[in-house]
Image (tube, rainbow, N blue to C red):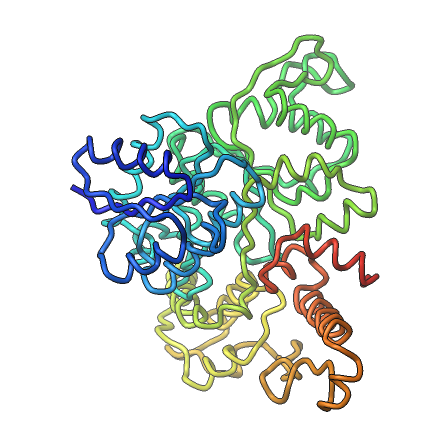
Length: 457
């Protein structure tokens, strides 16, 4: 028997869920709004919360945020009659177990509840190393990634992974596939920028014999090879407009034509794409289709750069030391404390891939069993410089004095403050509006509207 909190401002829905769940033997307490739900959650040890999203006062998303502050492990299922991709993405990123739209099937919500309450024993928040052995990291930033992977993997939704080069986007894509319902089916990767434009269409969709010079036989493309499994499209921002249009058809209709063929091939494949480009800027410049972007980014995942998760550096160093000591036949067992300190102060513009190269060189060059700072080959790289964002002094000042504040008025001062925050977030995010919106904790659409309103380029 589970103890379940049901939250909905509609009496009929509260009573329906209460009757439904109590028939299955669960203990159910209902609340009419978010504030009442928080009071109940403080007094009872609930196993699960099922909440509406659109409610007067505190919304379901706000309730989710408050519950996760005190009970991060508590499964929360959000329900709404107003399906919104923005709400769905926000809910999943903020820790909701699932997102269900009304009207829902009774068996559907029962199955989601069973899944939500059976995951506690293998929750990635407590066992990331066992669940994701190929991804090294235990920092809060990576724990969030692990939790998101675990929650989105079973659903067939398309995923867009974005982040700088060398952050491990393909490892995240493989982890999503390995935890999906098609884990035993093919995972087929392709790097869009590594294939000449003239051959890319054939690589993606296949071709028939005689369709072009050199086509001496029929050939299956990426989507045929990945049928029933997952296709991973790396560097998706490199696709030409023609290929983008054909890819959109695959996403919409689940069908395509091989090069030179008049027959349509059906395909059932999940698409995971990755990019280190700022696709919003590519859309604004007319180089990337907006409709394709929204089809790909049903669930966007940002993989943080290594400089944002420095707590993982010692773990990564240990992992790469073992790997290259074995591969190079060396007995390098550790790194000196000063050597590790040097790495912790470094910014890693090449991210995890750069750290791996540094350790590989260090193991190859070191004559003893400990890597010293002089073996790290960092002399050509710039060290991180502290700036105003390091916490020294105020970041944003919109009015210097009380007189100025009241002379200019609240609206003007708040507008100036908002502009400064947006500019700072865009700079910190390398001009990525998606990342800046994440830093500011606003939706991408809201940020795009404000940058246009304030003419912030």
